[in-house]
Length: 224
Image (tube, rainbow, N blue to C red; front, top):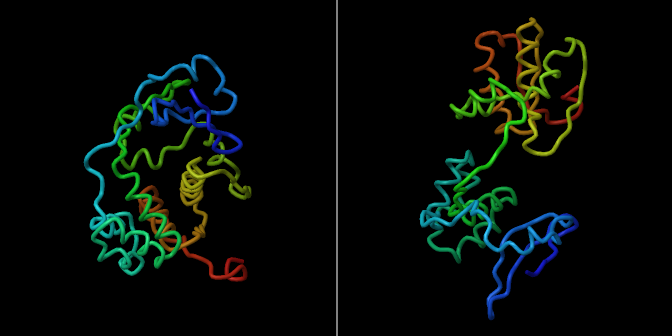
């Protein structure tokens, strides 16, 4: 099998069959040379392509479903074929254009099998995993629960990449402060993100957040 370097961390394992290059999977550099990895051309299929991919004319409505405003999505409203998508993406904001192209390119990918292993018994996790939905969106991992129980006056900055649970930690911490009678100021980077966090927090706290406020600062001075 061939090994094609993608970046400093990953390689693509590929195979030449006649004049065709078959891409098999992406692996870390340190595993690319292992016999059980680079000689195995028939691993379990984790994803497949379906026939239900979005058409170019469906992108506009798909973006609205993802929370993009009609004004932001308007360059894609009249797209009727694939050739018109790049031009529409170029006339939209970078974020909106990237979202549209990502939706179009990945909508046909179906993850047919998800594999996981639970290392520690966690009844809350097991329940959330079973029912899914909004409960999963608010699941707080036990390793992060100490943040919720910090003293009321304690200040902490939480850093991490996307999907590591920063916002969920903030929501549970905010819930604890509100229940303790603390007037809370919840700040978001933009109105879209703030509205989602506000809705979830109010769902968690019920009527206990009447002393709290939510806003997007327009300047550092306003934040202070």
